[in-house]
Image (tube, rainbow, N blue to C red; front, side, top):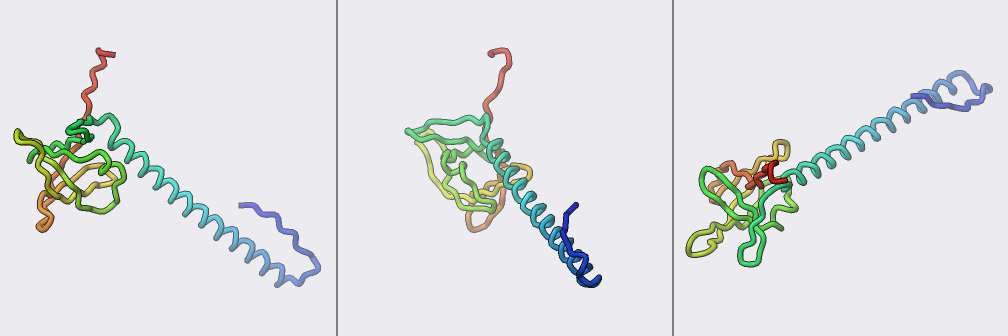
Length: 147
């Protein structure tokens, strides 16, 4: 860091040293604040990119005039409203999920948790005893020959 300080040479030596020390300390504090703000900005930017990537190239289903994403897992498939997955909090939350059967859509409540760093989804059908099971959103199968 370079700083230009205009200090009068008529000041006593101790006063000049104190001015230099305070100027360097303030520059150091500014640098720390700028680094912290930059880290926060980069973290927010990374979260936005992960949110975009989570729903990019995912299959949307139109059922009864509403748009749903399909969560595929080993324990069954669930349909979640498109709006519910747009703005997700960082902690776990209760969400309305639907199961599609021959008799129609069955609605239930479940707890959804998303690991922000790995972008994995975990769902628990029971809201009282929470046992998370891994799920993923169904992707559009890309075939390069059709383009």
